[in-house]
Image 1 (cartoon, rainbow, N blue to C red):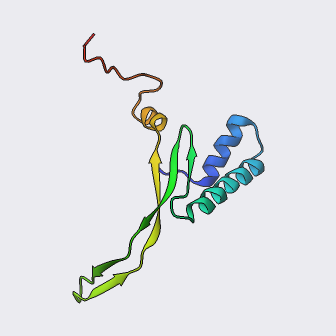
Image 2 (tube, rainbow, N blue to C red):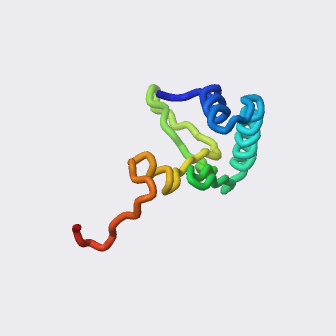
Image 3 (cartoon, one colour):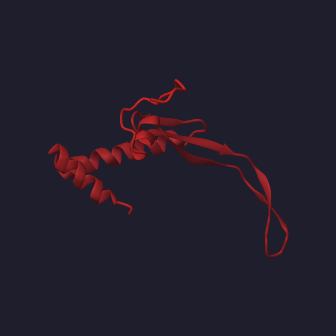
Length: 107
């Protein structure tokens, strides 16, 4: 189930005892910083333990209208991308703090 910004603000406020108004202001500032950095090609922000937000340039291309089969020119644009970090992947998959066994031997 997806959580709203209000839920995130309440949870951070509860766990840190920082007032919700201040938590909301910090999260809005973080959102603004990430948005500003992503407005340039190759821009990005890395949040350790979470992942990396970056922008990738999609080039100009031709597409086909499926109804009329007419070719259409699509102008290139910046696509926001999020790549999850190693720590986040480990937490999601239930491997918190464990190092993978790369020795090839079974215990």
